[in-house]
Length: 65
Image 1 (cartoon, one colour):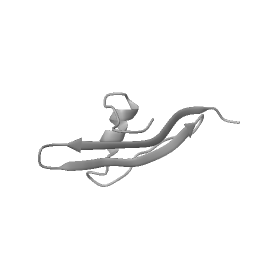
Image 2: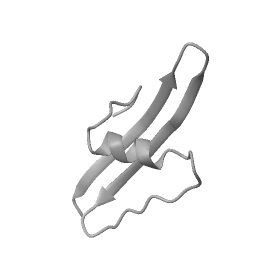
Image 3: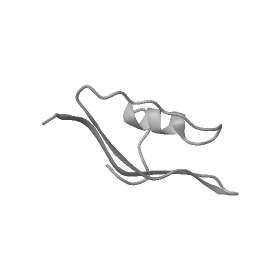
Image 4: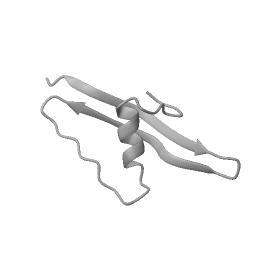
């Protein structure tokens, strides 16, 4: 059985301003196990940088672990 190296559980991130709320991530969940490779693909504004920043602990998620 492979060891889980990273577990993302129901991560959400909402950016708020006086005028609007932007939901950058909505309940993202996945596990990365030993010997697995992760790639983040998506269109502009899909949340790739936000998710990467949360994984790197540069940002805190609005909710989730």
